[in-house]
Image (cartoon, rainbow, N blue to C red; front, side, top):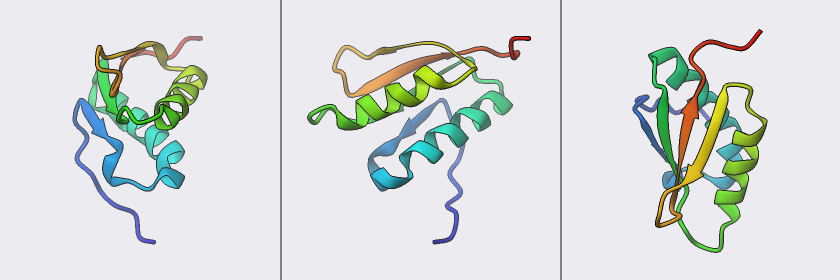
Length: 88
């Protein structure tokens, strides 16, 4: 499958992407968001039974430039605070 170019904004909606691509997609999105200078972003994963939310949180928990993340009140998206400069 050919790569899909998506505009990098402060929000990523995962609804239109296959779950199998989510890990790589979120990683690349965070990298590109940092390159664009975003300090805060939102990842929309939907509410459902929480599988996508759990996957997103797992990725965020391991990412070296994620300072913190928290659920939106409706639990359908996660707000992410990014570290602009990598730690040494």
